[in-house]
Length: 281
Image (cartoon, rainbow, N blue to C red; front, side):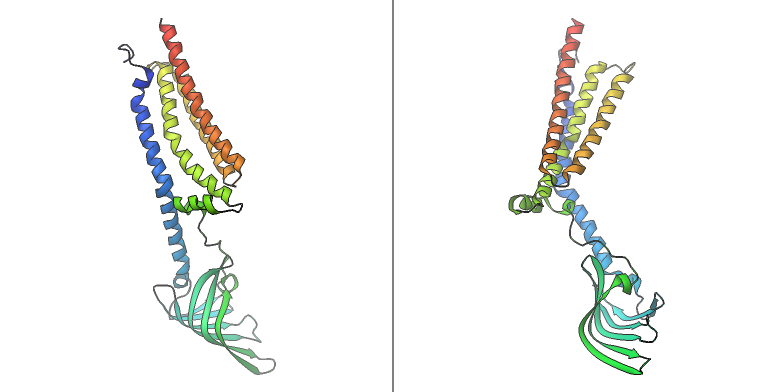
């Protein structure tokens, strides 16, 4: 191909065309596919947590928890709503407490999973004085960290990567708090990282020039090209992690890093091509 006068850019056109196509494909995934799938997974996780009562509490059975709590649930519907609850709290054997409630549900509140019992009564028994106190409640909250013996779970708000591109852009335009920097970093990351295949295409074109399409004795060039790809990915991950804090200087530094990488390889391709032509003359 070189003998018939084709330039290096003409010879590398299939590689670059594939790089451009892949870059647009990744851009579409970054802007729509990845946020949509991340949010769908997160929503599924939250739905499982909402239905945790089905897994922790067996319906129609007196469930003994932590050897001091007994919980009975007559029914749990498809939405995780519990019906006809009975709870016996015997942590203090001299002062046991018994609860009954018509309804109950597990919800997220203050970064913890909590059980809300509704429309019930509470009987407080004091064996030391042989007295019983009776109370009616509309709503009573139990922290599952003590009630179910479970650890607190993280908040249920969507992470930045789970937000749609439209929501991120709205945050950039309308958010006046420190979180605006995180919105900018997120949309910048989604756009600029899609250029990776095109950059790797340039690396391949450079390798094609340096090896002269010869499969023998070109281990050094292959190692150099592979090393650059690895170093670039390491640098890219570094700037991605740093820019997630919302610092504007790291977002700008990430853009400069990508720009310099593209410029260096375009310059290297032209220099290598000219050097090869001079050498052939």
